[in-house]
Structure formats: C-alpha cells, structure tokens
Image 1 (tube, rainbow, N blue to C red):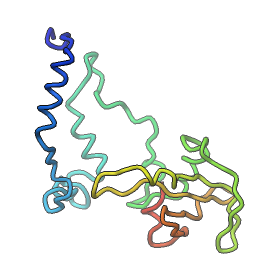
Image 2: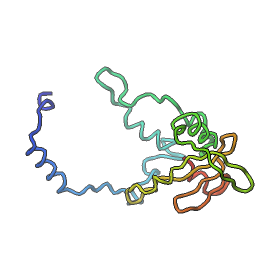
Image 3: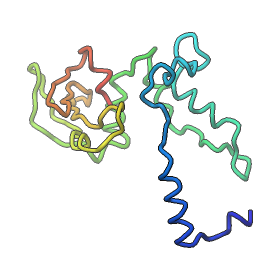
Image 4: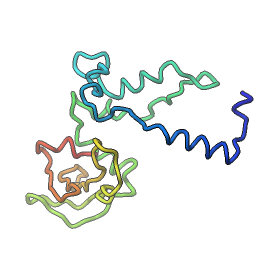
Length: 174
C-alpha cells in the first residue's frame, strides 16, 4: 500500500517510459492460426456461446474493495431483446438511434432508395478517418431510416450502398 502512495518524480516517469518503449508489444493479433475465437472455445460447440461471454468470464473472479463485482451489472441487455440466433434484428438500430445513445445524431434528410422515402439518417462516415490497428475494421457508415424509424440503407465510407436484406447488411449495421 505504501508503494502505491509514492509519487513518481519526472525522472522516474521518463526512465520508465524509455524502458517500456524499448520492448515491442507482441500480442500476435494478426496470427489467425493461434489468435481466433475458436481457440478460446467460443462459438458452436464451445464453452462460451458468444465472445462477450468469454470476455466476462475473465472478470468473474474479481471484486472491488466493497465485494461488489469488478465488472458492473449489465443495465441494458441488447442481446436479450434483439439477438435472434446469430442475427441482430433491425429493431436494434431503431432503438439505438431513436431511443438511446444515437438520438443526438439523428438528422432529417431528403433521401430515397428503391422508391422508398428515407427521411432520417445517422451520419457516422466521418469516423472512417480515425486510425485503427492493422487487422481491425474501420469505423463509420451512414445509416438511413424509414418514416417508422426502421433502418433501410447503409452507405459505407467508400460510397457503397448496402440495402436491408443484402448479404452484407448484418456486417455494416451498428
């Protein structure tokens, strides 16, 4: 405990930073032979049904000083309401955009696709300029919604239009 109360001097911080930077971080993230969800026993026939279950299992043994779990209780279980088998229902995007964290991003637009009017959008393509680590997907896509608030069209950062029901629909959704 006393060591935790020690305030580090600027020279200690500088020295420790140099030592840390001498060693490359080798997490083998791009070595798919050993770094994959199947090897973590996630998926059909695995110990864990979902990736989230595996991640949470790593936190189960830990508690805070007051004996409460280190990982907080889930307040909104999106999977309980919107995950059917291994597909997310489109109502999830409706709930996120119009009833939760996305409400401040919803804009009124003048767009149509396949003869359907799409008066609402959440524009996130501006996030596609953020740097991501090699092997990870880029952020961002613009999603357009019907009058009822259902997602109907996604425009990817490269301008590709992905329509509801297409092969890539699940990949591009929020």
